[in-house]
Each structure stands twice: as structure tokens, then as C-alpha cells.
Length: 448
Ligand code: XLS
Ligand code: NI
Ligand code: NI
Image (cartoon, rainbow, N blue to C red; front, side, top):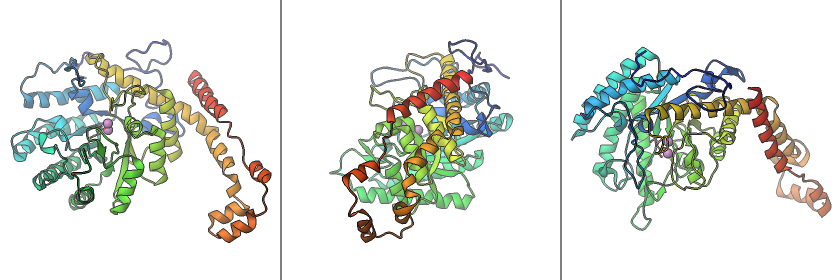
């Protein structure tokens, strides 16, 4: 294996040392948990934009990142050289998948024709290395938010030329998905929203967005692309309101426009928090609609209301996510855990890119182990079944099977006393439930 990074391969070291270094404590790709290998449950992906392009800027400071390919000054030469670094990082970490936006991997030319020509050269190199290493594309997408032309949106821009350009960009991006065997294709509408309602034709913009999605579906059929389409909800930032606000809003949009048969959801931890939800909530909402597609694994910071894209390290959260995944049977037929995450600005070395992925992977592997134990004991399954047990027979069953009317409910309830109704309820002992999760966490990881 080449050694462009001067690091790795990253070994499994187990729990010999409590300090986290360049080794996995929990993640063992072949270890079987709940009937599948860890690699099959987790399907980790590296996000090209954060890992290889991100300079670790913040709104007040320039980039601090130090990368081994910083010596390349020509943008096309850099783009081509970088691909070698990316595949070496994937293989040294033992990550099976990667994700990218079209503009992450290659610089733009003056026209789309020129841009596509540069892009295709880099795609050729990626295809070669996919072939050589077996690393797969979890998803790609197009960047319809960075360039000034997208100032007022892409598919929801009030300017028809910008819509047309966006569609043309999407077409080529779908062809790349096809060429590289993408398992999914993601739409994140960073600027598909508004800054102000007064100057916005909300209905017309959403109609345009739906047309854009339908065109993508039609073109995928035309070229035989079988990647699963995914929409990634986010409530705001960079716009003050984004149309794909959260899972529930996005599901309503898909159903309104008859697109729910062609799209599922890609859910991100930090986006869930920005919408005022937990990550588990968003996943549960998608599951309830049968629309769980894939996961962008990152976390926010409770003290900062911004999409910080931290690497996941919160075991309580990774446990809740993996519990949902275990209960579902998989992340989604084609889904994975994409680290849409970057190291902090103060973690600027190349080695920190490895360290941060190791922490993310170990945190999800640990979460899987804890969730598997909870699942094996059917702790929540039993608790929930018992909590709703009164709907299994009698008046509850009549409500569920549709045979009971309001008149039937009146006949049943008219003479129930206050005492009888209070006695029909049970304490949830919620504090004990939360402590039980803690106990599983400590015990399962002690055993691991
Ligand atoms: C931004 C999004 C973005 C998508 C891909 O907040 O998370 O990175 O995942 O466009
Ligand atoms: Ni994301
Ligand atoms: Ni994000």
C-alpha cells in the first residue's frame, strides 16, 4: 500500500489502553453482532468535502488545515492528485464507502461544458481506484449552493436560467452516479428556501422544486440508474427557511407531489437538532413513513446553534441511532453512515483526520453493541407493547379495527368514574427507564 499520509493502516487494539489513539477499541468489521457483521450494519462513508477539501475555516478565521497535498498549486493537478490520497485514507481506515458533491472533486471551468470535461477526468481516476480497491460510492450529489449564481436558490431560484443550469448540472451528476455505481443519490437543498416571505412565491418555488425532482426521476429511468434518491432535510442555514425543514415536512412535500415512491430520506444528526428535534426523532419519523434511506452521522453542540458537523462521540446518541437501525433491520436497503463531519479548527493536522474518523467509527460501533444488548433483551419492545396493551382487546381493539363509533365510545365511557380512569393509567417510571439505558451502556461496553 502506498504511504502518502505517513499513517496507518489503523489496527483494532481493543481496550488495553483507555486513551484513544490511532487504533479501534470497538470497531471490528468482521465481528458479528445481532446476526450481521459490524461492517454490514454500519456501512461507514467518508465525506469528500469535509475530509479532503475543508480548510477548517470559521466565520471569524481563515483555514488552519495542514494537508499533505497542499504543495499542489494547479487546481486540476491538485484535484487529480488528491484522489490518490482519498482512496489511501479509505483503505487505511477500513471504510467501504465515500460520498461527494460534483464540485468537491474538481474545479469549475468557465462554462458547464468546460467544467464537465475537467470533472470527467477526475471521475476517470476515481473509477480506476474504485476498481483497484473495491471501495464503493455510497452517494454523490451536486453542489447547487456555493456559486454566486445560486444566490436565490437553484431549483427554487426565481431566475429560469439558473433553474436550467441547475438541471443541466444535475443531469451530468446523475450520469456520474451511474458510471461510479452510486448506491444512492442525494438532494440537499441548501438554498432551496427563502430569506423573506414577502418577496417569495412559495407555492411556485415548491412546484418548481417538485418538477426538478420529477425530471431527475425521469432521467434516472431513461439511463437505467438504480440509485435510491434521497432528500436530506435541514431547517435553515444558509437560508433563513429551508423547504425540506425536517423529516415530517419533507414527507408531506413528497406526498403532496406524489414523489414518495421515488424518494427516501437522508437524515443528519446536527440538522435534527437545528430543527428542534433529537436525531432519534427524525429517524423514527422517517421509519414510521417507511422512508428511512440513509444517515449523515454527525453531532451538534448544545451550546452553539449552528451546523457544526462535529464527529459523533456521544454514545447515548449513537446508541439511540443504532437501536432504530436494529429495529428497522438495516439503515435502509442502500443506506450507510456518512461522516458529514469535520475535525475542530484546533485539530488541524492530517493525523487528526484519521483520529476523528476512528472516534466516529468507534462511537457507532459502541452504540451498536449497546443497542444490540437492549434489543436482544427486548427491553423497549416489551415496555412499549405493555404500554399500549389496552388496545389489544376490548374497546381498544374495536378502535383499531375501525368497528367502534363515537356512539360506541359513549356507551362504553358514559358511566366510567374519575377513579376508574385514573386507575386505567400507569406510571412510566421514566427516570428508571433513562437509568436503565445508562446501565446497559456501562454494562454492554464493560463486556465488549
Ligand atoms: C449541509 C449538508 C450537506 C449535505 C450534502 O449541511 O449536510 O453536507 O449532506 O449536500
Ligand atoms: Ni449532510
Ligand atoms: Ni449538514
